[in-house]
Amino acid sequence: MNVWTSAYDNGGNPSYFTKAPSVTPDNNGCFTLQVRVDTIWTVTTLSVGKKGSYPTPPVCAPFPLPYKATFESCTPPSEADYFSDISGSWECFNDNSGHGIVMRLQTLDKPVSWEAAADTSPVGVFGDRYWRNVKVSVDVRLNGASDSFMLAVRANFQNTTNHDALDLEYVVPGVWLEFDTSGAYSLVSQANQGKSFKTGTLPAAPTRGTWHTFTLSAKDKLLSATMDSKEIFSNVDVSAYGASGWVGYGTKQWGHQPDFDNYMVDPL
Image (cartoon, rainbow, N blue to C red; front, side, top):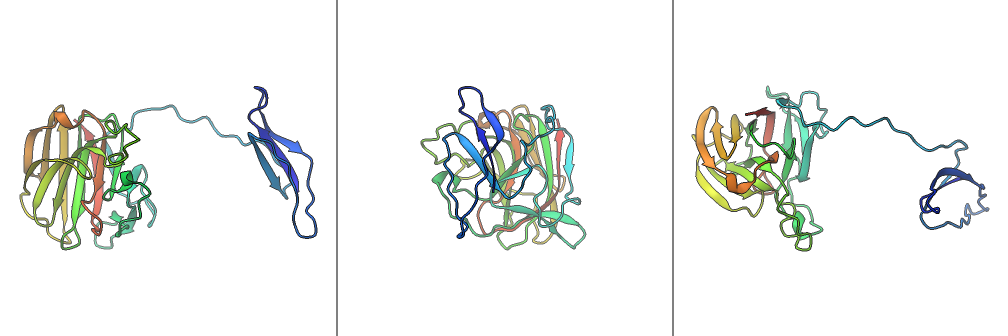
């Protein structure tokens, strides 16, 4: 067996992928190798090896706006580009009813949490943590009798720095619009365990199995929302709930399986 080593604590002179003496397994296929600390050892039947290489990474740049995701280039059941699931798994799904490829929540049961911080409803974020004045638009279809959906602006983790008390690490503070098939809505200050600071009813209760278009617009300290081009509310002061952040998506609880499509973000 051929052997290579990489040493990282070598008197300030690290070495990478250095050829070492070969080893020969015994009749039982076993061999002994004396290894050193702070090293990586490669044991292989291959006779050729070298340190890997990579191209120069692209220059850091803001996420481009405007941006529209129709998901038509996403192969089910893949995850869509740039959408970052925090809890639950949202995957591309072939709708077969005129909308083509859509995003569907595929995690119906609450997973076992390793820590209290991960004990949240299915949510994800998209875009740039420095977005401030944006309008997010999305087509939503509620499929179950009590399905819900959440849409967010200025989602962030900026006030969750206490990692000794992990009860709030993954709840994603920001401004979240929650609604369900009853037609009721709430504005909450975080995706889970959030404080509701405004409630009301939508222009109409979302029809199960029917697509509806929702928008959420944040401009300076004011927030407005529409459903199918009809006003839900306008000019709500949200200055107390974060100045910038990602846009977000999710459901209020496990067991819901809504779809969303035509996710658009425009600058304001």
